[in-house]
Amino acid sequence: MIKKTVAFHTLGCKVNEYESEKLSKELEARGWIPVSFSDDAAVYVVNTCSVTKIADHKSRQILNRAASQSKKNGAVTVAMGCYASIEKSGLTADLIIDNKDRDRAADLIEELFEKESAFEDAPAPSFTRPRQRTRAFIKIEDGCDSFCSYCIIPYARGPVRSISPDEIIREAKECALAGIKEIVITGINVNRYGAGLITERPAFTGEPLAGLLSRIAEETGIGRIRLSSVEPGLINKDFVSRIAEIKSVCPHFHMALQSGSGSVLKRMNRRYTPEEYMKSVELLRRYYDDPALTTDVIVGFPGETAEEHRESMDFIRAADLSKLNVFRFSGRPGTPAFSMKGQIRNAVKEERAHEMLALGEELRASYEQRHRGRVLEVLLEEAEENGAVSGYSKEYIRVTLPAGTPGEIVQTTF
Image 1 (tube, rainbow, N blue to C red):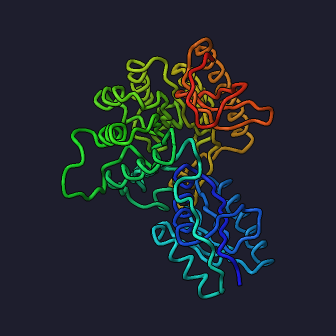
Image 2: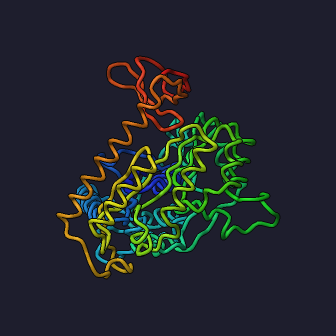
Image 3: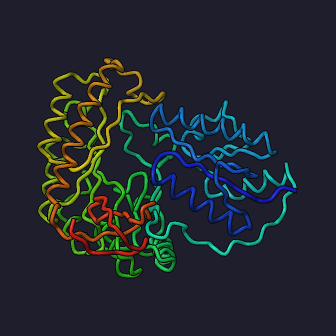
């Protein structure tokens, strides 16, 4: 008899982290026991990512490792997530769960296990809420219909479907009861919240996401609400003026840029210009006192010239963003950019990534320096070996204190 034990390995975005946590909770409620991925388990679940070639490679590596481990103890391997949805053939997994079947994942896992194994019932777990005691992710929508020329995710995730506001509020209240101090609002494209939402009565007045954030703040008592990522098109006066009134919304906006060159943005099929992006930056700074403005940048997009790369660098410096996530262009089969002319050599991508990373470090240091001497509100999260405790401010500045208790929110001079 095999105990009902399950281990997760999650790659990729915050949406994947949320979905792994949700599935883990569903299985726990059915008597499954979560264990470490390095331990013996009855089921190994790999939540895959396909945003880049490197993500594909890592997904295959982890699946192969799980399959090898499974052979030793008669376990089964489950693949889910975007890579599993796109590359169904040739995966080393006993069960592949397509994104469209994600809501049935717990049933599918149990059906597979009942066919292949006899298992011991485990004691029902006492814990049914998020394990992380300080921060939790809440997914408000899935899918994307933007179809940027480089992105495979709309093909893996499908069209936009928004989650009912009442369901989101219920989940946020559960987090508050579990002692969660900060929730991170996440989705594949949160700008599109409200699309695909079926409800018998209007959920909000005005912009749907602003209305949702207002309800969360008013009805749950959660102290901090953070947006995981937004697109420039969301940042208009109506939206920003409304959320600036919600004191629990963190002054940290991860607003995807991808390139500061207008001609590259056009080839990417991004639906804004550098000038429009800058207006969004200026609007946020009008309503917030030096908010954290972080972004994603792709270097080496097909056809990107040295001049376009320099335009991107100059724009990012002028925008004075606070942190950059830098990605080398990775062609995804099935997307328009994969077959575009002017593919950039890897050596050139590496050189441009190095330059962009150096700029990002310069901007990060400058932003933190501007906050030196300020009193920051810090959510303590992790105990260090030397007794110190680290956490993040509302601006997502990492702060380490000599002592404290994880889960506390403290005021401290940075």
